[in-house]
Image (tube, rainbow, N blue to C red):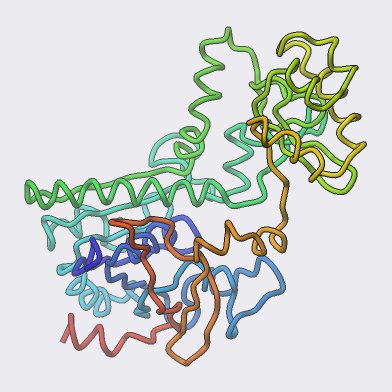
Length: 378
């Protein structure tokens, strides 16, 4: 029995942040009913991030909406809204990621839903919160990365701002919402009390930087300074970074410079007896030049036995060929109602040694209408 089995989640969210939260709840056993607009559905169905089309729709949609049901309903129509409220009255969790004010205008705010379901856990993700001058801005990942200084932590000094290659703020906000909902569900069980759980992408992006922001406030307000080359953390000295080798790349985390100088047989590195932060650019330049003289495997065979924190730098093709990846059994195959099958990742959480696997793929738009109406509305 999965931890959230018999819990009902009604999810109004679109794109990535909200659906990633409901995906995790579904992985943990909750029944997730996805509310979609008739005809078009979740905008993410046609939000193509690559040329890959899977069963007529975006790969992003399939990734983030597996193991859910789809209920297509135009709840802006009074008679349809009345039907929908019958479903909401039986939900344990309701969540959305619309801009502030949208759910209030259609009569589905927390107070509206609480009136028909007093113990509901109501979760919402916004881009910038419900207050302030930014609240009406679109909560789009690249904009949030840019506005929260994340882009000044990636790349090298002189590169300009560099965004991350993932929709990281979306995923962080989704994870935070799932955490808040789980905490509220625990309180609901213990004290028979519902909750309003609110997360903003803005605050999630700030929280992601708790280490660097704390350093900034306690270091005289000095801005993070990326190293001129091989930067991996603006606040860490050499050797921390990724270096090119003769046939690939090598990641170096922690290591005393004198120890590295001896292990790597690098005479030029002997001039730096300490890991002085102010000398990191010089030290990295020496390392970068020296490490290009041999293959990655050559350096790993020296460094790993000496307990130096290092690794190869892999792409997907190389990663998936590794035994360390295969043993995780992290890829699962799921099947849609029409028989279409696709591979995707599984839930990363284990409880009592068991992984959470579900072979149910993403839903076709409105495919569960008849079942949901019969079960909850008629």
